[in-house]
Length: 342
Image 1 (cartoon, one colour):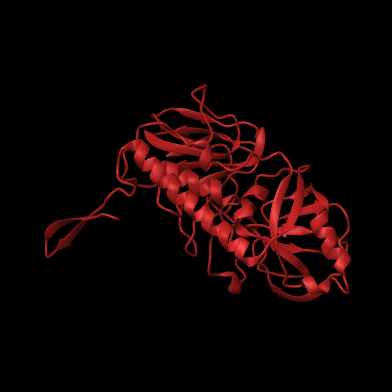
Image 2 (cartoon, rainbow, N blue to C red):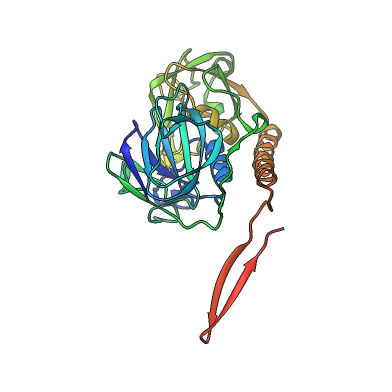
């Protein structure tokens, strides 16, 4: 078990998201920064999709009831373990009774804490992710508070060696001007040529209205060619809605499933991690990209996961994928089964 001694601004349990239910009105949720989330699970030795804690702007103080192994990735919240500084983008053992303290994010916005075995909360519609607006998933469908306790899932690993992720696998630091690649459409024909030019030639600022649902930006007005409203249609993550006031809104993990504003483009998936680490006041530029560039960026992201997993295995001196062991009982006879992935 882990317990929350002091609570951060907005900490929730998140995993890869609740996919497959948008047609029924259920948002996806899931980790805002999928790169930091996935790398944290890799460093902790967890399978893809394990539930982590997502801490926003300010982190929590967490006490561990048992010996375990954890990883911290994402924003730098100056974490300490029993008063001693520990690195972000690292993994290390934690002894029973130890306390991890995370403070204000001096660089970036969101930090992910992965615990070996994952955070064990009930699965709702195939996911442990928290969607607070409907009180679904996570711990009672809400952000964490002082006194909360969370169970840790079973882990088949016995890691005890500290790991510090090489710079080659870390994203560019947040806090500088962020450039996001955008695929135009599906309603880019609802904007004037001047409006499209404005989108890709201007600098925008993240406003205070930036959360898990969407990031509202402020800057030069984007000109519509007609009405700003459309018949509501599907709203993918990264969609850039432009209401009548001409200011873009980029939809994020907790977005609604449909929307009735024109969408001038969509930020590609690999770049949404950069936006998830932006705070109000940070500046954003949008750059048009092709389908081929978007596919290439996705491939590079996947390759980084594979390379990071291979690096971890090498650093620990073991196979990249440890064997999974099961016991099968047939007619009262027990059989041990071991599955190895090549």
